[in-house]
Amino acid sequence: MNKENRIDAFEEMLTAVQENYDQADRRMKQLKAEGKEKSATYRQLMSSKLQYQNMLSMYRLYGLIEEENG
Image (cartoon, rainbow, N blue to C red; front, side, top):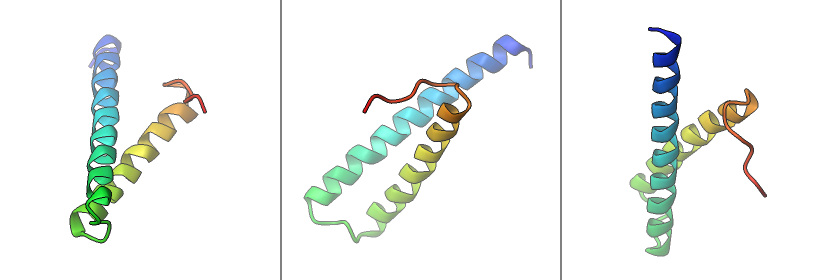
């Protein structure tokens, strides 16, 4: 894989991670509003959200994406 293809693949992966993080966050908020914080689905979403959050933190640490504002 050449460097340009790797950059394109990284950008695709970053977009997917950000979208999955946002989707998990929205679904968790919905479940919380329904009083379902103790459900298996909520807990699975929490695990996924934390995994995506960790990946985004690593990208920030290595300067691959900008820091979030406040």
